[in-house]
Length: 188
Image 1 (spheres, one colour):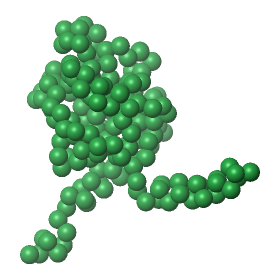
Image 2: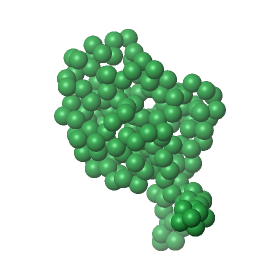
Image 3: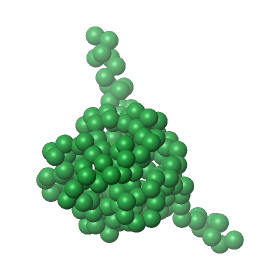
Image 4: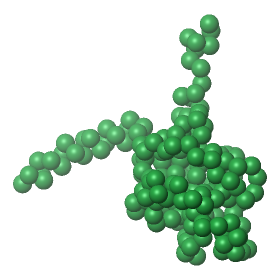
């Protein structure tokens, strides 16, 4: 009886949150980092290209967390994220952060499975310790140091990729408009 009285108000709260543009989790399991979480900025060395700063101030980033132990069944997620970013011409926003005890082990584990995104190494496990990261791989969108989106989707179906692309476009547009100078400050 108590639950039936609680459900209508709870449903209203959930509908209000969804329509307000608040961050939502599209993940099917808990990963340690959730929408709304603040993420402290951490520099990570990358195997290809320049080093990256996760949660860089005033930037929107698409970060995939993984380990060299991720199962082969998780490969569609790892391949789908860069494919979607390329499709919406935003691949420069994405990179992978991998926990690995050392770089040589990571290189051996990766073998021929090279990522289309820069691979950066969290050798000390800073993110894994700080956020109790588990169940990798998964991807977060971090905007100005705050997680605004999470997904662990298996990108094997076109509609899943299209949904992720639509969500990313909305997040990128929202981020850009938040950083754009307002008309009142631009005219001064």
